[in-house]
Length: 98
Image (cartoon, rainbow, N blue to C red; front, side, top):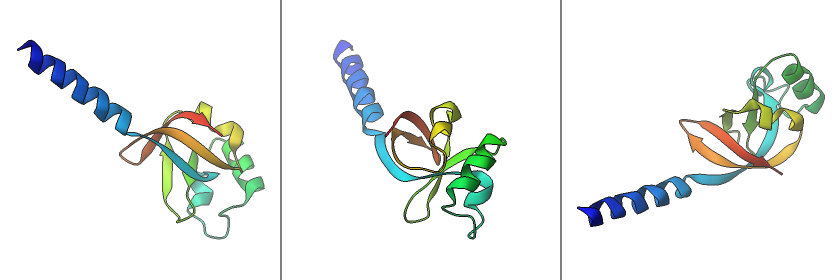
């Protein structure tokens, strides 16, 4: 029984660490990321995020990721960044931003 528990704990540990990843993209707000004319507009992203529109990460291929912990990303509004974090159901929980 102790072996089973030890194996289960190790497996869960590896599963959790495997979920961490890097995501590269542009920090934009939810509203502008849906408007093709505003995509990539740094001034708009900064203004809209400051105005309360949630920040998202838009990748080069157009994938939009929600951000769970907004406080870690809003300072990077309108910038191309690399986000280290975990992804669950289309939402990134940010560990760090470079």
